[in-house]
Length: 319
Image (cartoon, rainbow, N blue to C red; front, side, top):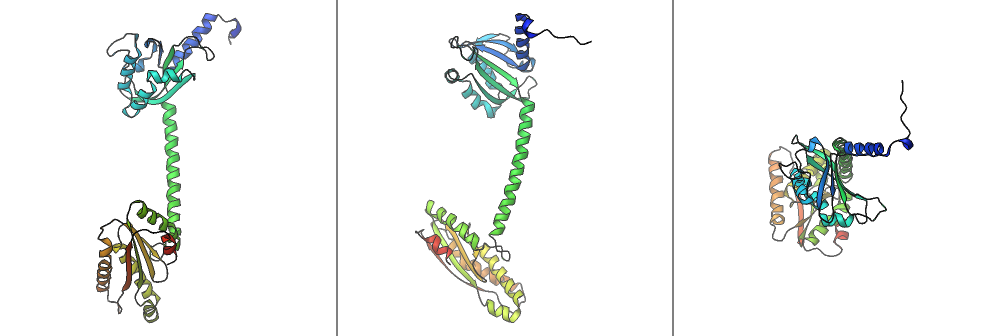
């Protein structure tokens, strides 16, 4: 048989207050009232899971300066959250903010009696009605939000993983769109994109700009005499040696069939530009020595090292 509950209008006021009080106590793990003028706090409720946090260490006292309770809380706040908690519970700060707000809140990890950290929400609010200017006490309350917060963090982690996957795919497609498939060097789209970046890097860091033009020796002869497969091999071989020899951070662009442009921001006094030619020559010499081709693969190049000047982007992209 169902028992009808009494209408709220005829319930005893004390019963209503008791119900509200019980509801609030079950919602929060700790409830403290702070007297603003004196800074003295009274612990109204203190659940067992926070028995490691008392008004004073190793004490069951229920009344103490809020600074003492705050100090004990700091010890049990996760190290990564302590700075924010100290700022949040700074008395001058929260008293001033509560003059124009009903409550303040923050989320942090709080150590419980089992010595594990759990996510908690800490709330400081006015103890008077929202539209009342009487009284200046405030409530300091802690409630458990561990399950909700962990679920929220899991969702955020999943979203970040999805976004990272999409970003990786975008980056891969972006690079593919600017890359010459035969040599792995950049194409003219890559030249247009990276020229400003490299020039700005050199300008902003007082570095010089290394620019080199390279082409393959005798490509037409290779294609006409030994076939286009030989020409393709030679182009790939030269591109490979240019990548090895170019200064660190260089962008290598295939501007035509057998033509390449290299540009990089280099620091003053760098030896890399001066070592470039010898590296290319020795690399191609070693490449030819390992093969029994009836032809020799070679490349011609010319480079310059200069400070950044206006209009350089236009010059590079017109090569």
